[in-house]
Image (cartoon, rainbow over all chains, first blue to last red; front, side, top):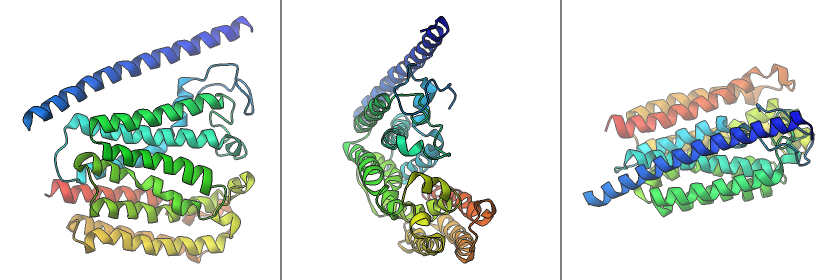
Length: 45
Length: 306
C-alpha cells in the first residue's frame, strides 16, 4: 500500500469517526428529550 | 455518490466506505415522500402527541425507509450494476462491500423499530417492522424478479408510512389511515409504470420483468389508465365516508381529474421513443405533486380547519 493510499484511508476513517461521533451526540440529546417527554406525559396523567 | 471508486465491479473494496456512501444507500431523495406521508398521517390523527415523540416517530419512519432501501440495494447489487441509472450506486460501483451494506441495513431496521416502540407504542413499531420486511422479502426478493405485477403488490410497502404516523399517535388504525394506505397503494402502479415507460431500456438490460418489458407498451398504457380509475375511487373514499372535509374534497376532485387527463393522454399515445415521451414524464412528475397535494389537504382539513 502506497503512502498516498494510507493517507486516503486515514482521512476516510477520520471523517467516518467524526460523523459517528456527531450521530452519537445527537442520539444522546434525543434520548434525553424522549425521557423528559415521557416523564412529563406520565406526570400529566 | 461523492467518493472515488477504489475498485470496479462487486469485489470487496480495499478502502473503507465513505460515510456519504452509507447515506446514499438510504436513498434520501426517495425518502421525502415517505416522510411527508408519514407526517401527514401523524398530523391527521386525533389526539395529542408530544412534539419530541412526534419528531422521533417521523425519524423512525425515515430510518425504516432508509433501512429497507439499503437492504434492497444489498440484494440487487448485481442487477444495479447492469443499469445505467443505478450503476454508480455504492455497491455496484465498488465503493463499499456487500457485508457492510447488509450490517448497516439490518442494524438500521432493528434500531428504527425499537426506537419507535420505546418512544411511541409497540403497535406502530410492529407496523414499521412489517413494512420493512414486506419491502425486502415480498417485493425485493420475491416479486420483483418474478412478475410484471411486482409494483402492484410491492407498492403496499410504500403505503405504510401514513398508517405508522397515525398509529404513533393513536396506538391503533381506523378508516382514514386505511383509506390513505389504499390511495398510495393504487397510486403506485401508474406512478412507476409511467417511469418504466421512458426508462424501459434500463430494466430490459437488467432482466427485471417490468410491465413494458414483459407485456409491451400498449398493455402498460392500458394498465396505467385502469389503475388511475381505481386510484380515483380510492382518492374519493375519504370524501364519500365523510372522513375529511371540503378542502380535501375539492383538492381530490380537481387533482384526480387532472391526473386522469394526463393518464388518458398516456393511454392514447403509441410513442415508443423514450426521448419523445413528454406526456409520460409529465404524468410521472405530476403524480408526485398529486400525492403531496392530497396528503397536504388531509392535514389542512383535519388540523388547521378543525
